[in-house]
Image 1 (spheres, rainbow, N blue to C red):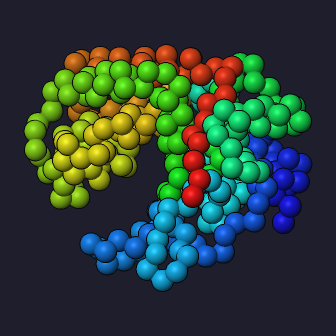
Image 2 (tube, helix red, strand yellow):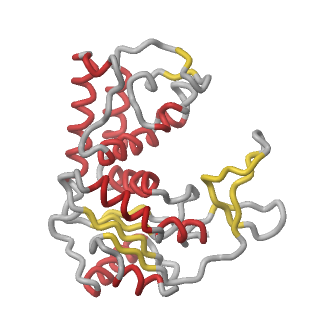
Amino acid sequence: MDFKKWLLEEMPLSNYKTKFVREPYENQDFYFNKVKNKKDKSQQVSVKKPGDQKFIEDQFSKKDRLVITHPKTLKILENKLSNSKYNFNILLVESLKKINEEEYVSYIEKFMNENNIKKQNHITFAKNGTSGHILTPWMILHTLGHAVTQNTDNLEIESRILNLLKELPIKKNTINPHGHKSNLDHILAFKSIQNSKEENDASYGPELVHELIVEYLWNGGEIRIKKPYDNNATVVNIIMEIEDIIDNLLDNCVGRIITDFETGI
């Protein structure tokens, strides 16, 4: 299949475009979790020889190509982002050669000019390869969250959001339905927080900030609050403050190209 022709001529939404310029490696697999003794179907690796696993970077894997080009992926993204006040260009475009991030941005600008993609009044998100996790609609927006925070003083922003979360009036060290200790799963509704383990788990660091950005975009500019906390004024005010921070982050990206750039293997 000619991916470029299909996506430029048949894709119904003009500002979602994907261009594949190289054939994917055939020798791909899922990450094998030795602790669980099974393959993790969310993470992808390039296997050059038996027992050798390396996360795929600087290319879109065969599995990602199948997901990205599936009509359902576009339909879900279109549906979810249609309720946002922002206009998006989501460009999943591999680079033709090993280049740095600055050169990649220039490459994207050329691609946009050639295909009449408007940058003005749009958040243009470009990604050049697989990050390891399969690029489902949620994961595409998660990587967009990476790009959004990297576009500003992300350490300060992440600290502000994480400190606000610590102010939430919730019980400590309670057990969620999955048998994990968690503090936030009683308030926040998205899936990854339900699977978090401890307060010092990686899920409670920068990745949680990226997940909050997805949650905000996924729900039309709102972070969902679970009952009965949705009637708690303190909780509501803290979540609203986090929403304002995310809103300002996104405002700073309008009219610009932001990237989640893989450095290559």
